[in-house]
Image (tube, rainbow, N blue to C red):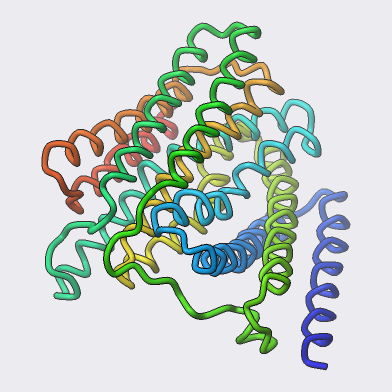
Length: 363
């Protein structure tokens, strides 16, 4: 009876959200309504990603995967889905001109936010834990082999993206898209072979066990995963509708809004999950969740953009790519030289983020 009640409430909630969202978006909405639904979409995305991430972590435990593998593939793909859905939904459901601008903004904003702001939050969390004597040093104790692998794949992808953006030739765009997809396929193959490190443990908490007393069987894991995905899709769709309305109503460029708001909203799952894992001293899961998502975002969504948009980038967008690339290269070089990942290195991402945001508002 409890399960039936929970499922009934969930589907009624989804129905009402879609109903009211559609009614308000069809009218000229006030700023209060637009902001309300933008915030609501963020909450829905976060809830969906939490259910999804919990499911894939349980799957990782069942399949006896290493933290590096689960973080860089299972958790990363799960929490990166909103950024993948945003450009696709923007192209399908958005206004013709606004939709493409939002798509490009979401595609470029995601890896930038991960390599700058997400890195900063992880570094700051580690530093704060050290200051409060919750860990021995201001260092992320992560699997360095997997970290360097993920950074190299990301660096390679971003170099390709930068070159193809400068050349701006449609045929080269198509070729590059397939090359990026091949790079990600190779990344998955290598990541599946990452070895577990001593002391790695997974959570024994399955959300549906707490909510409905369901056992963590494959059936219930699948159901929770699908519900999480449904919430992510709903949240992403609502966000696209109302970010478009906001850009039209305010007269501000869709590209500027999507570079600032869309990535912040959709990167919340990575930040939330990774900070939580850092606090629990599961640094490999925390870092791999972010760096794995960086590889994913530099391959899959960019491929969509290269194929389905004109992909004409200005100086600001190219700077976005260069900053992401620079932060990844700095991190790789420091890890290679020192043989560890100090918190201050990750916090350098905050500097790139502030410079980029300052330049956007300056122009």
